[in-house]
Image (cartoon, rainbow, N blue to C red):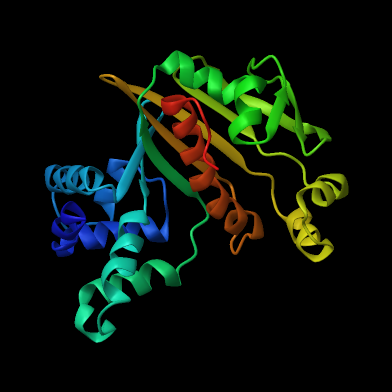
Length: 258
């Protein structure tokens, strides 16, 4: 939390967060175009924000994309704003309102896991692992362009749009999200109204990036392609943190979260 406070103390860094909140997943060049400062200054500010956990990054080819991660700000809000008068929070309260007022169309999350890239890849792809922390298994050969069948709550979902987009073992994995069917909704306990909203939305995709960091692996998850005001984004934003925490716990302790 100390690092987050230090990062937020600078108006230039707060402006960078606002820019990412307006459009997530920008390159350094794109961020510089919207800032009245040098490329070197923007790069230094981004490094501070990333160290504080307020920005997470992932690579797309040769491009490094930057994503806003509002988790530390939410932690500040819960720790301080609910205990004291919001008027005394000043700039932090304004920043929180700004972050919440503009809906984002992407979800980005970074965690560090005490494991190896090989074991983490297994945990992301093999049914023996995914069944434990996710309750989902995939039928696919994990080759680029391969079809995917999702199995969840005893229901199998197959669709031509469910495919592997990228597959670079131990480094990067990307695939399209599953189709929302009536059978899936019944098994997941999703009501008819919510299902209808989900079926009207565009198909999304999720990308996992694995990077070795000493004895740990940095896992970055980016789920994007959501429509504005997406019902699926609201659901996934609640589900991913718990799911990834259970994945981390499984790899580090051998058991999932309760």
